[in-house]
Amino acid sequence: MSTQLDVSGVVEARKSREETLATTAGAGRQAWVPATLLAVLVALPAVQVFDGFNYVLHLGLYALMYIAMSSSWNILGGYTGYISLGHNVFFCIGGYFSGMILAYTGISTLITAPFAGLVASLVGFGIGFITLRMRGPTFIISSIALLMVARILFDNWNFVGGANGVTLPQLTIDVQWAKIPYYYAMLFIAAAAVYCSFRIKHSKFGLHLRAISQDEVKAESAGINTRFYKMLAFAISAFFVGMAGAVWGEYITYIRPSIFLIILIAANMVLMSILGGKGTVAGPIVGTVLLIAFNEFFVATLGSSEINIFATGLVMIVALLYFPNGIVGTLAQKKKLPRFLDWD
Amino acid sequence: MADIVQVIILGLALGGVYALMASGLTLVFGVMRIVNLAHPIMIIAGAFVSYWLFTLYGLDPIVSMPIAAIVMFCVGIIVYKLIFEREAASAKYSEMTVLLTFAVAMCFDGLLGTAFSNTQRITSPFYATDAIFLGDVFIPTGQLYAGIASLTVIAALVAFLQFTRFGYAIRATTQNRDAAQLMGVNVGLVSIITFGIGVGLAGAAGALVSFVFSFFPAKHWEWIAILMSLVVLGGMGKLAGAIIGALILATLAAFVSTYIGTTWSTMTFFLALFVILLVRPQGLFGDPLEES
Image 1 (spheres, rainbow over the protein chains, first blue to last red):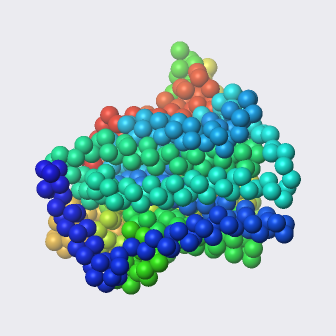
Image 2: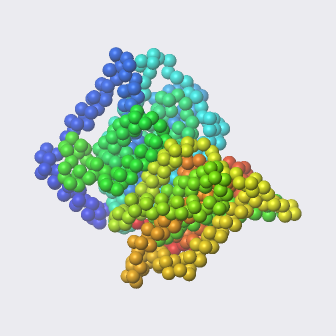
Image 3: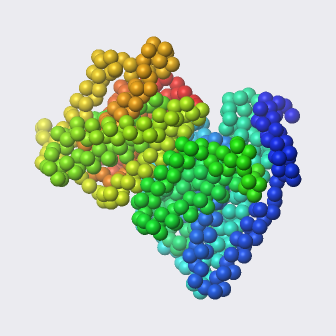
């Protein structure tokens, strides 16, 4: 294949890495770890039979949402190397699309979430058409500007309630079980996002993306349609974020720009991926679990939301300075990655 | 006609303040290629210095401008020493520093928010709500003084860059870092001091911002995009470009605010940023942008 000749560096690196994996790890990938994890997560709502575990379920749901979003972000930010600090725009679009359908027709977001994802990816494709012409720091700045534009638009769009937002109807089932449908929906989205991220990493499309992240000009001269693949990556990474937004909107029963379009959400997505290791499959999951545990600890001990922003920033600085490749990435570089974390 | 003159005057007065806000940003980018997303929160930190000096000791914000600048200069040096110095050798330097400054911005946002809470504040010296009338048009005195003070500081900055030895060193480093180092310029020292000056300029701008705009810690996210649009329009790293960009866009925003609606005036900056990045990413006066 002529397209692969000039990205031979990438191909070779991949081949040699797979060889070392095969020799050091012996049997290669371990599928039972994600499978067990998934089984545990599927079984988790059973604790609710005894009632009083709503907090556990909420935390699980919240973590799954961020796993879906940071894995999704990782497709653009990790594999392709385009760091977006305004990715929660798609979170907002998904939330508003499904939320408005729910408010006007009563159709649950659990049904419309895939369409919300599609709308988010269509918008992502369009936005990517414009902003992906820029590269490096310029792209990051444009993504922040995108967030600001979206915030002004949603704050002043009266049809969707402006800055006050819209209250959504609640499910009429018992409080004891009320979180479970959303929990499973988020679990499904998160699993799909991680699986998608895994499949992309092991496909030719993933190779194209990594070639783009390493040297876009060379990738293009090697015959890769960089423009199209970048936009596709942007659209896919918007898809799961949009779906997560749809379910999250109904779960918290109201949608408002100040819930979706705050910079902390975008920062969390970026930080979780970087902390865990951007460009790896397991990285965003590790980062999400760590950061949420850290956040909960901080809220429990200090209890203020603004100190939380400070803590997030501080963790981000430390992670960037000392683990620029993230936990999974750094361990893999030192060949000390435990086998249960090696999902690549 | 008088209407249009009025709008232009209001725009230019605000543009003067924006110019000072953007000058530190563009200086730091010029010397170190750091896109300092933490610049706006430093402005707000400077505004808090002036605010407390005014509230506690009744010190006029324009008088306290040097104090805010010096305090923020020290903060800038500490931040640079702690965080950015070691990044100079990093391969993904420009991307890395953007993320780092973003994290620094979050830290300061959280700190200021915790310490002073996210309520709107404004210092109100006696001239802040006054206006001078010249025939049909009026000039708000607060904005006029702020504009004059800001242009004075910028003039001082330009004189410093043009006529002192250290200014030569800074300009040489901006033009070509490696060549400057070969010519015996202590590039490391220049970087530290320039970062300090950049943040110090943010502090000085903050003193003016404290009575021209109302401020609260979380407001800086909006200013990131606003200041970026000014700097990008003029060409990243070009001081004159940033000043002209500030004057142009502030005037444009004043027109939008008068004829379309106040809500949309900030939108002018964001849309302008997109358009500039698309049509002419190097800005009006800039050299083509280096891509990492």
